Structure formats: C-alpha cells, structure tokens
Image (cartoon, rainbow, N blue to C red):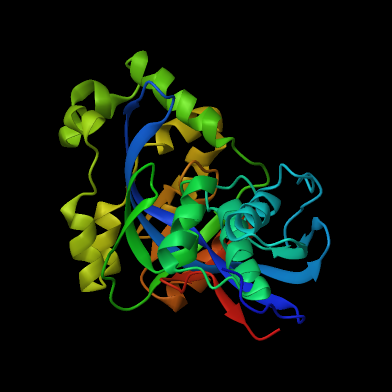
Length: 319
C-alpha cells in the first residue's frame, strides 16, 4: 500500500563499515562463499538526497573521486529505487544526489550504503512505510552488505553476510583508516583467495591453524571478538581482529603489507584490511592516539582518516 508521499526532498545518511573479523567458507556450487563476519558501522558516511521525479536519475559529489561511477540503470542506488518502486507499486521516479565519502571499491561498503540510504529515502519520499522486515529483504536482494548499512551498530553477519544478529558493543572504538588511491574488485579478491587455497599458498589453511579446515564448511566468528566488543576493550579486540581475505588482498596489492607495518610501527594496536580491501583499518586506544597515528600516516604520504564506531544505520535527517 502506498501512503501519501511528500513533495519535499528527503535527506538520509548511511554509514560505511569495517569488518572487524571475517571468516570465508569454501566456494559453493553457485559461485559464492558463506562467510561469518563482525561488522561495525563507522562515522564515515554517504549522504543521499532524494526528490520526486517522473524518471530515475542519480548524480554524485563528495570528497572521493566519483568520475568513474555509472549513473545509468546499473548503478546500485538506481536499482534500489526501482526495486522499491516495483515492490510497492509506486508509479513515479526519483532524482537522487549522493555525496560520497566512503572509498569506492575500498572494502567499506560505500555502494551498499548508497543502496540502503536510497531505500530509506524513497520509502520516506513516497510514503510507502514498509515494515522493517520487508525493507531488509529488499536490501538483501541488492547485496550482502546492504542490510547492515540499514541497521548499523555492530552485528554478526552469516550466510552471504546478510543474515544479521546484533552484537553488544559498549563504549566507542577509535579507528584510523588508511585510504588507498586505488580500488580492488571484490570478486577478484575472492578469486585470489580461492587460488591461494587451491595452491596451498595460504599458511593458515594449509596448516589448519585456528580450526581453519572446519571453518571451510561452517565459518563462525570467534568468541573472543564478542567478548572484546562486550567489554568495550580495544586492546582485547586488537588481539581478535582477523580477515581471511587479507592475504588475498595483499597478494593483489603488495603495497598494503607496507601500510600495515607502518601503522603498527606508529602506535596502532592492530591493523587489518577491511573486507576485500584495499582500505586498511587501524584500531587505536583513544582519540588522542588516533590523531597521532593519523599525523604519522599523513606524513608518509597516505590519506588517513579518524573514525569511530559503532554508529547508527541509514536514517532520515533534517534536509
């Protein structure tokens, strides 16, 4: 059912994410992998503004280079808007303007945040008032990370990453992001992981560390991650950070190894590649430590950003 729509524009802010932990299962017959991941939404946002229109269109701005992004029907935000319109029987379209600040192809779910922000914006713009469960189902059909961008906070994702369970995290965690000047294709990183496993190049899987062989069939998030989040203890969390995709990302972009070393030499408690990379996330003790590391990374010629988490998922803001 479609409820009365608004003629006013709608502004939605949706967060990027860091994968604090990621286990990747074996390659399935359908070409996908089951995963077990711990997501945290962080204070680096995509701003989606939506106006009623007869057609569907999107334009981009923001602090990252968006010149290579498609603006046709293949764009994930356009796909999200059209999906909601079809699902709810909305006859009109929408004009979207998205200010992007999450790195593109950076492993932080920027495209997923765009899609989640668009779903929330169009739901408000068109007055469709979809139940949370329906919006989540639409999000999951768009991509594995889209449901988390809707919910935000800290959560465990299983299946393709779209089956979410909230995770209790107390306090605030501080991160310094080393943002690469290039992107990595998520399918390429997964493909490299499969290649390395098949060739016996991944020591963890070859030697069966941390129950790795069993995790191929049923990946899970280590209990140590949940304990550290519940305690709000960054040093405890630093010991538990892990990403199966990191070795593959470094294999495709060797310079990431030097970035990881540089951060840990300059005060980071730990660093890891977020998702499929190439963004590297460094966990630090507090805001002062974050500033010190940010300065050190910037002095080395890297783009470094201080963010904190957890933060809210996609939500409507005053225009």
